Image 1 (cartoon, rainbow, N blue to C red):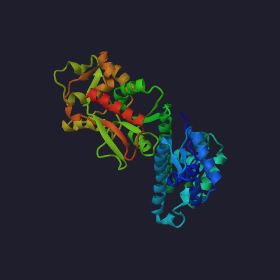
Image 2 (image 1 turned 45 degrees about the vertical axis):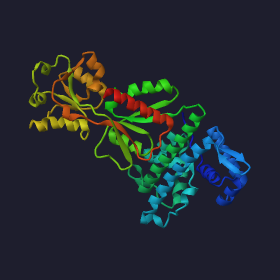
Image 3 (image 1 turned 45 degrees about the horizontal axis):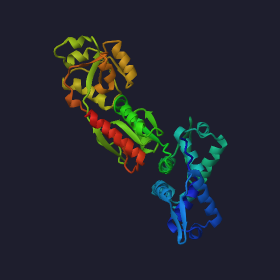
Image 4 (image 1 turned 180 degrees about the vertical axis):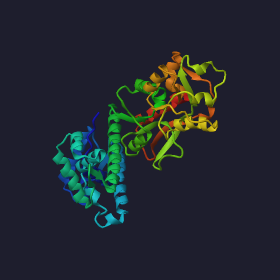
Length: 404
């Protein structure tokens, strides 16, 4: 479901009315006419398809939907305020950037900034937004003029985002994510829960925890969409920290990869050496590291926990590393390479559960209890999940309890 981000000025009007419980008093505080405030509230209510206020003799009070929306809007604008405070700490920007300048920024300008920063190209950004390139140029340049700082530098290959642009883009993404959360909550309150859970998944979870969790969760929430993003861990972590996804599921990293995320261990399976049925090593009573070194392998990229465990097998035995390797984390490719050759791989047996059950692949007997890898969740430290998202997390935990 494509949710349109509301006008930031309307959101500030909404918070003023919530605080002062009066359109008249809000008008005096934010220097906006009463009809303009009434119109802004009406547009918000139309967009959200709900009433945000109840009118009483002693003032205006937020409805149940209004209370939910007030919480999310406050958190959203706090991200933007924090980014302004961070920019103001830069001595080179302090003279040009006023503390209250963010109150003048529009949703259109922030959307243009995010789109351009994501792809580092005005033409591609305009196509992604579905607007003309001149509109994106104008919004971005108006934002630069308003802030009094450069957001983009010209390079030989096009443009690059300045540090200030990156700071503001991250805040805008998190602010937009918070508003979407609020819209999901309001829809759920109206028994129209058609929210989307965005989840980054690493290989270890894709064939075990995740499919079972999605099936069980879908039985109870048939209209909720789940968007799975796959990719290298650094990319998923970046998207998580910028609000593009809500959860990363897979192998945990220690120490914690960033101070603005938290990890929760769900499961701790050991790794196994997997090969095809009929592999020559299956006939040996005892397999040594020297035996393993003679064969070609399929292994994940450098820096991953499984690659480190693979290298440790040979380092601990004072044995040379295998020289014939294919680097890949694709389970489809790994499976086909194993079935069609004498290659070996180091992987959790649960990732090849179906092939092992069918007898296509076998687990090679080799002591690897020390390779247990913590599998779990990684979320933003200040993330506030909706009730639906919390239920999905509960299902993930239940499935992992069964695996343990």
